[in-house]
Length: 208
Image 1 (cartoon, rainbow, N blue to C red):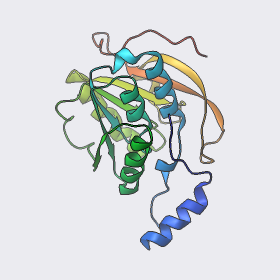
Image 2: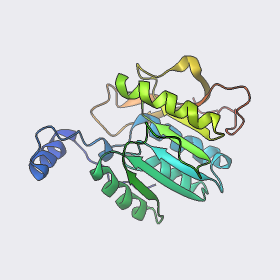
Image 3: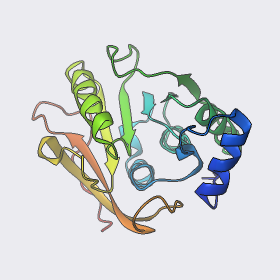
Image 4: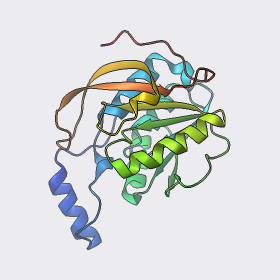
């Protein structure tokens, strides 16, 4: 997979402040590969059946890493959702670099019903902020109840609700951002813990 990524966050963030005239413009999360997304990408490479011939939504897509990994694993289509318009531009550029196409929605979907026509939701790195975490979980639970398979990737950040998750795989990953505490970490992949939910294979990866 090829991604257009930044080497340092502060110079890019400063460039965004100048470009937008907004000193409070969000950090460019979309310019880096994060631990949870990297873990989902590895998981889909080992378990393409999770997304093959299915319609996928990449929540909080950032660079589009998870959606692109899904398309490479044989997904029928992939839609990225992010609130940052710069992320949309990054996603489109990264998709072209990998010879594929993904759709992009620039909006906050967490107060809406889960979108129709989606079979799998990939939620990578959605647990770094407490407010966001408290909104993401109920939305994913509603999607799960609607029969949508959920795949979560995260390096076990503070706000990850592990008590309601079922572990699927674990991978050593190397992030590309100085915003993480460690460059090398363990990326975990989870499903929501529902005994009747069988949309995601429970098999663990051998990679540790």
